[in-house]
Length: 391
Ligand code: PMP
Image (cartoon, rainbow, N blue to C red; front, side, top):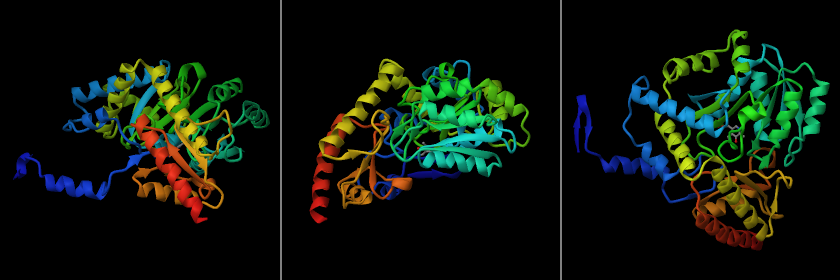
């Protein structure tokens, strides 16, 4: 290999590449994680392109095309789609800083660990959370939300975790959105583990800000946060002082509108990766065909769990399309299942939050084949038998 200091590197030092690879991948693993998830091969391939300036015409063309494709996917023609260098939590913070008055109240619905995070974000930004909390495994029901809004008419916004990754519950978002709009409140949706696998119709459902992270159902590496933001949010932002710099939605929109770019440097490879996935979706027959693929995959995984005689954690009828939370059999801790599966080359997800001890999770997101799923269950059956014998 030849190294020329002023011109970069000519040739490829395999030893260096392999040294790094050995740290990350000492052994092969099949991923059934909660995210980051296994990426589509096309995504990994386009992410290897050489970098270019995020102020170049070529980058602007990529950003513009990706935003337009995502807006189509989200049915968000009246909203503005933003792509920023952050993870989804960045937009969680942005929703509060930009659209809720200082000391203003927010109705935070909690069905697990990520609803709790939203409450913390509200508090840590000096706003006041009013909490509607359900026990783990349960969704929020429309009548409960309606009741909470009747009792708290002075809240400015409602937050909903669309898919609660810690419990495997999918909230009934279209029905909940209808209630929020009847009460004329802003609606913020954490769709980090939903976007790309559960239907989202931004315009029709009247969502004011919905956000996600790249490393979930779109199967792209982490580092990119995506959101669709309503005009109402930008109007409110104009009246809110001290929105901060990094997550100032008006500044982010200005860069989008004036130059199809971002105020600070975007994760160009991830945006190329997302663009590739949106093209895969198109080639597959469009959004609804793609969502069907996710629904079938989730069904196959739930069937596999039930066939092993194990119990699902989420309330029936509200199952997540992206993650299945399973009750560990009596006497076995969730983490034991996780560790035994890892020794066999499968990275599932440990239980998370309050139900950590007695559950384990099987993620369905990203690049997973039916054969991978069948192999997972052959191994899981043996692991459960082995662990049962030990108790
Ligand atoms: N909300 C939900 C529902 C999540 O699943 C996660 C990540 N597991 C987050 C928020 C946080 O996302 P990020 O780490 O990408 O900011």
